[in-house]
Image (cartoon, rainbow, N blue to C red; front, side, top):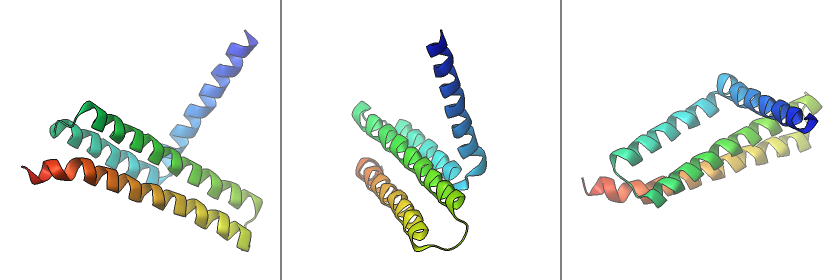
Length: 120
């Protein structure tokens, strides 16, 4: 029973993190909006099941990386509020990870959607 209680608390905390990311992070909301557009476009263009799975996985990875980026930035700010080269590196690399993921998502979207859009 204690194990079930711990899992309940873990899920509750995880949902709190999702809600916090949605309510406080503009980039997270932008990613969710673009994700919704990608899914809607996939439905409209009738992409294949496998292509939709690829889109959904790309969305999940992108949102996850955005949350990791936010976590790293928050932890860095908690550790130090003054300028430090190592803090800058942590934040820059974290932001670079998000940029790299976003570029990958754009490439995936282009590979799946552009051929269909060109045939319209």
